[in-house]
Image (cartoon, rainbow, N blue to C red):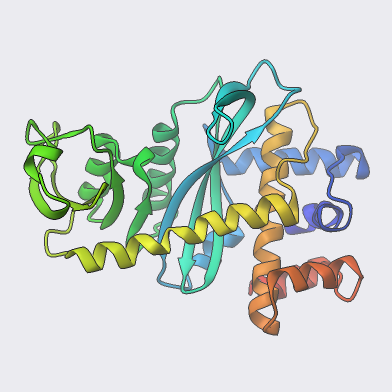
Length: 306
């Protein structure tokens, strides 16, 4: 699989673009066949990176980011830009990140577009695949308030997975507004959701947090939730350094293949920076100036896949 994508990965780093015509027709068919075997409905996971993640006990972080697009009108949705209060056309990338200390492994993603389920449905499908298909078990799952839906909370609790999410202040706990249950700026309350799942809610000034571990205290919640910021840093690198928004192909499959390669590219740079004790930006510069060429043997070495 990595052999097929090597040329594209080097082009992404050196040229910042993706052209399906850069490879032969036979290799193109192999690429499409291999990719179809990876995809399940709207989620895509990367087997090489899943195997790498299994070597470490890590935390699973889930988050999404907007990806503006203007040539995919048949699949793009109208998305609000929170910075300008305007709207743009595009889709959202739901990223599944395996976090081990400062080491980040983007193990998969889903695309929220016209033909897909909701963002929560994508997260739920991804969580189910990670547990049932890939047999992964994170130490804890971290996400913002977009993923605090009752169905996700119940699924994680049924799996026995601990989680810490942001909680929306307009929601109810045991049929009572959370602001009434925790009227002051600090405190916690244990109750049940509509689906009878037991959770513990913390309030820290105007922020609310949710967990299914009743023994957690506020200091535990704050410490764990700060780790979620690692996925924001990952999105920043994917956008500014690798260019996940640069693909101009006019099909959702091509967009997914490009994102697949961006995730592998990020993992290679992250692994190189860890091995050589340098920043991820320095690792990319080494590839651009041909100090390092990401050929198949180097990719296997970087990803520790013998």
